[in-house]
Image 1 (cartoon, helix red, strand yellow):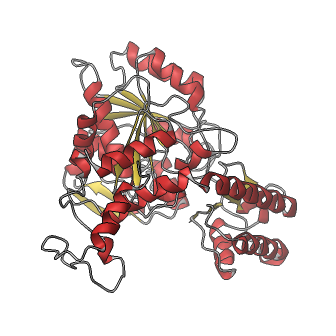
Image 2 (image 1 turned 45 degrees about the vertical axis):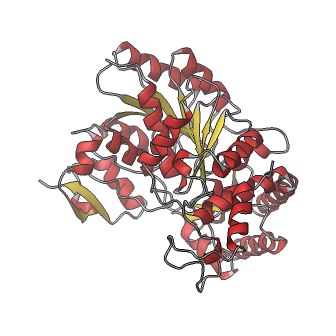
Length: 464
C-alpha cells in the first residue's frame, strides 16, 4: 500500500490531460504554479467527511505512525478539531445532568471559547498558582488541583463532561498528562488536550511524549506548526481510553465545524507528511533537537537566566535577563534577520524544526551577543502586578453564559472604558490568542491591569 495515496492520485490526475469541467475555477492553470494540484472531491479523490478511499487510507497510514486508535485529517487547523472533540465528548456524556460543564485550564486558546459558545456549555476554570508571576500563556496544573476540582464539581452535581488542557502551551510548558489522565479516568471524565504545538512529540528520540501515548482520550495536533505540512493541516487524534467514537460520528463532527470544500493542497501535504515521518524525518528531528539544546546552552552561558525551560523545539527567551523588554529583543532579532514566533513585554518565543539551516542558529547567537553587549541601552521589562492571578480568579465571575455573551449585541470600546462591563468576544491578539477576560465575565480591575500590561487597546463588551 502506498504511503502517499492522495498525492499519488492528484499527480496522476494532473498528468492525465483531463478537461476540468469541475471546480475550482482556475482549471489547473495559474500564476502560483500549484494550481494543477489543487482539486476538489471529484471521482476517485474521495471525500474528507465521508472518506472510504484514498483519504481514509492516508489517515490509516498516519494513525499507524502515531500509534493512535484513529487519526482524522483537518484542513482548517486545530480550531476545527477543538470544536469537534468537544462536541464528541459532549455527545458521549450521560444525559440528565443539567447544563454541561467543561473543566479547563485558564490558558486555553480562544477557539475553546468559540466552541463553548457554539455548543452552549459552561466552563469551570483551573487557575495558575495564585502566588506566581507567570505569563498569561502558562497555567501548570498539578494532580491535587485537578482531583480537587473534579471532586468539587461532582459533589455539586455538575460532573464535567470532559477536562481540557493545553500542552505544550505557547511558552513551551508541558502538562504532566501521564499523571493527570488517570485522575480523570478514575472519575469517569475523559481528558482532552490541545496539542496544537506538539504534533512532533510522538517522534522524540527518547520515546513518545504525545498526549495520546500518555493517556489522553482525544487531542488536536496542528500538524503545520511543527511538521512539514502546509498551514491549516491538522489531526484529530483518538486514544484508547474512555471515548471510542464511531468513525462516522467523528467525520460528522468535523463536517459540522468545517468547510465542505477542504483544500486538497493541504490534504496532499498531510499525506506526504506521513511518508516523511516513515522516512528519515525522525532522525532529522533528533538532530534538530540536539542543535536547539546546544543553542540553549550557549545562550544561557552568555547570559544566565536568559533561556526559560520549554519543550524541545522551542527556545523561549526571558528578555528580563538581558535587562530589556521582549519586544525590544524581538526587534534586535529582526535586525539580525530573525523573525520570532511571539514576543510580549518579557518573553520571546523561537520555534525550530528540522527545516531550519545552521545559519538560523548562528543568527540567534549573534543577536543575543549583540543584546548582551548593549549595556547602556537597557530598559527593564515591566513586571506583572503582584497577586494578579488570584485577583483575576476572584473577580472572574460570569454575568451570563458564554453563548449569550458571544451572540448578544455588542460594541467595541477603548480598554480603559471596559471596566465593569461584560466581556463579549474575547479581545486578544493572535498569537497567543489566550483571553484575559472570558465571554460573559464582568471585566474587573485585575483584567483591566492585564489589558494594559499586554497592550490590549480595545475590548468587545455587551451593549448596555
